[in-house]
Length: 263
Picture 1: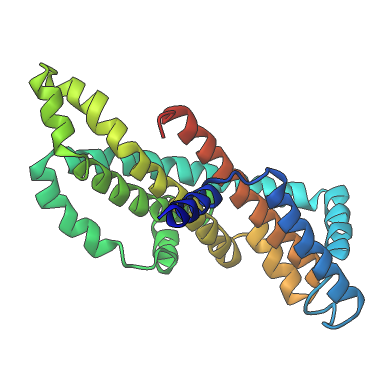
Picture 2: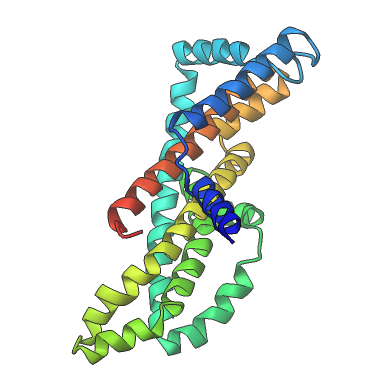
């Protein structure tokens, strides 16, 4: 019996042990070193897989020429504007669907029938409606962000523990206090899950939209250098997209930690 308890205690300690902060950096560094060695030994042609040092050199060249900043700035403008627009509308409508039975009955069939449509397939139609320019690209990103945010917001509101709501009402809380102090805090973790999911979707739609209908932007840059078979500069665009995704994820995580200190 004592042996069993000791074994369980050791397993729990193993599962709860803290991972040092440098572990993530060490993993990335190991991957880059292996990648560089593979390229230096020419196990893979540089045309298909350029080395990390080659990508850094190409990135520095694009940076000094101004092309990288120009394209990154254009993409950042589109994705930030589209993300904020889609997320804001998604949260508002998701809360409305969650709080109102009438809105839920009327809105959810429309919502779940439109959600499966690939948003990039709507780009030609949106260009026809809104013309050529920034508005169609921002709109397609906002559409892609809207659906995961509205669905998660709706689900978060509906899945708040009813016992908590009844307890708040029993202690004399009015309707607005129940919404503000019980339902919204209970739904926020699910809402943030939708916001994080939407961040990845927004990057996918940004690249697709820029490849189809843009002269500037990271997607347009990737397509341009892909057509020229300059893979080092193509990979610079891929790395920038990866860094943007990491930046968005970290920003949302920081905001979640601020708004949900109990989590």
